[in-house]
Length: 508
Image (cartoon, rainbow, N blue to C red):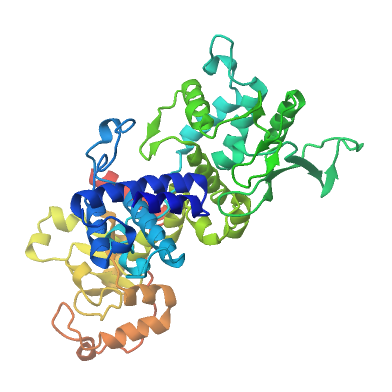
């Protein structure tokens, strides 16, 4: 088994980092085989049943199982593997057997794509989840990056590990460019260009760098695509040019992604800046200066979270980028990848929810008049009307008005009092009235009668023609007309809220 793994690692065209990682996974599979299936000593003996057993073992595996050393695992030993780790184990094994069969190193006894497919229970837990940094925390980190000083950084006996110009350039690039840490450390000398009104600004030109000059940053071949150019803030261009002005001559170094010999921008003393430098040095220094904790509710603050935060802010800006514009700016191959970064912020979502008026659409306020004379004199206890629901054209005295099916299309039963009647006029002239507002939920048909007008109300009246009113009679028997004018309903407006406040004051 070991010989095949070594031979596969030597032959595979995957990147060295992936080959190294997957080789360790295949080594775990070999240790599992020696324990559970000692009779299987080479890949040609692997079957569908062995694949099923291996996937089941991965699903129940814990951190530290089938490893030779526990260094660096610390307190994580014994914890269940994450869904992403499980999927990585299965993918590595599937690719290994697929390659061995395609290269005709072993006979085809099973289909790796089916026998070693990721189970739905694991695949369902996967998916990109960019962790955005909260706006207040991000603002503090931006302030710290713009004001970073040598005292904020760790130093040895000879001083800082890198020149301050390099540190400022790499810090501002991380804070404003929305790049992956690997892309930042692989930027090349001369990656910054300037334009004004679509005209390039060169060192030999007589143009003065205007305030509205555009800074263009050339990004090398990256994780998901080829090299491209994106506009960035002028601060980045100025910081990079300040570093290039003092950068000592360096030998060309190999680009780990493309294999080319290039002039890396962030290199000094013939050594490139490590990819982990941002996570291990820059971010802790900014956190210390800004007073920001190492982690928030979404986890540890890492270099990639800046990319997600910047993308989210560009998508939720006052004049936001479109999805395709954001895709081009981030350098994604497809808009599907960008969609995971283009998340609507809670603030924008809250405004949209309020503007939609969901609660106000389903709850309407109707004015209610309470006859205090009838209550205090005891007439209400004897059955006299004391509560009047204002329907616009008249009043309804039915106590359980909210439960009446005819509440928005009054059938004019005995509980109904027209405003044009003598009783209605006397009620309006009454001084000792308490005005209140009651919110009632509306059905879709009732809402349509309010929103759409006469036709919707006529349909509602026709449907309720044989539905009994609170008096027991139907509108058809009462003699209600088949059509009626639209009954105005008082919406929850500013004036209505003011009336409601007056009513609370009176009742108090």
